[in-house]
Length: 314
Image (cartoon, rainbow, N blue to C red; front, side):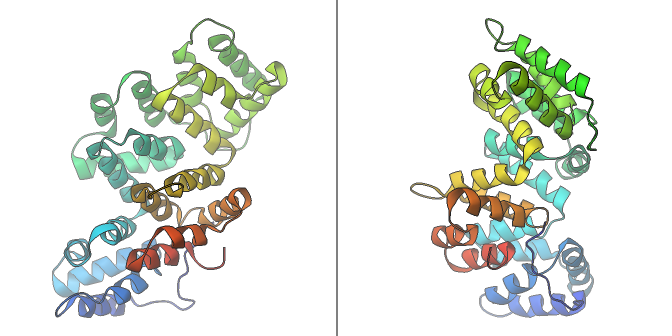
């Protein structure tokens, strides 16, 4: 469920483009005008604004924004203005450039098969190589095999589950992990990357029923590093993606300093998908609203922009 607040009346992309152009003119940029427009327009409206801006001023709005804005606000706005799949592709590329394997794993392992197909198309058009090639070149060992299989497999996205198949997979995972000395990673990769979300929830239930232990605990016990994080991301997003992202946001803001890269990525990429659910999970677990947390960890126009995306009173 989106947290984005758009005007109750239809907006005119031509008028928006004119206002943005005026905000850029002269000395300095009228930043409040820029963020007030862009943070209150959905993906379709933002695409139309870019189209109108290019037609009227023979200039790419993205490039103009990059020259007018700076720092964290620039990063947030430039990611926001893209459509969802292009945004994810851009965030994956940024994660590779920064060698941030955690961000890369979070994006890939939290997306649905249909989302991944679109991301792959955008990635190829943006970067000039296939996402699978990038994963092979940049990611090590079992982590690589998991991501590669996960982005290459067309998984079922519906709610139907075969009880017998779920029990069979639970037994296979127990045999591959807790029952044996060492771990058969191939079995974990195959089941976690080839099964639907609904099926993984059923496997988890069957595992707990038969062995008195959650699949999450088994993964933590049997695996480590980014491979473990990938498996846990798949499992947690099968159960409750909003809860997963609430936890990642909390980690980004707790303690000294803030991981703004994570904060920007999650807020910007989830605003139009399930941010209201994430905010609800955040409050439920941490007894503080997500808005309050973001307000205390950010400042200036950057803070205003993120709070606009989060919406009010959550």
